[in-house]
Amino acid sequence: RFVPGEFLKRIGRANVEQVQLGDAVEQSLTVMFTDVRKFTSLSEGMGAGNVFKFLNRLLAMLVPCVTKCGGTVDKIIGDGTMCFFEHAHDALRAARMIQREVRRLNEEAQKE
Image 1: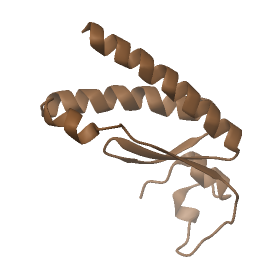
Image 2: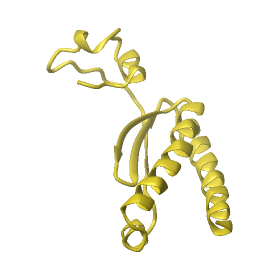
Image 3: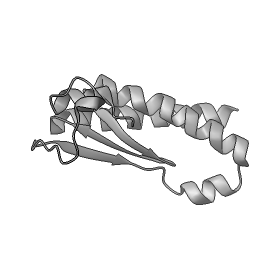
Image 4: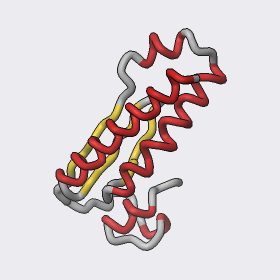
């Protein structure tokens, strides 16, 4: 079983072996979802290798933006992510940072 270390800390567990079926901790969190606009049509013309490179490049940028702002990437599903933050303002900071980085990646891609 894989459970992010940050998630374990938030529920008061030191490791995954301490988690029992049915464990629950009620907290107020902000959840942020990301998704690449028109990814399906974009990826259809790329080929598998280029899609893989694109997603790796995107996630290599996105994950640090989330963690720098105090968030945790909970799930990565294709071109989308689900992230959580303790405070809404941290999610907004991450979203703005991601937007800036996406612009930069798009500019770099146009030069290639």
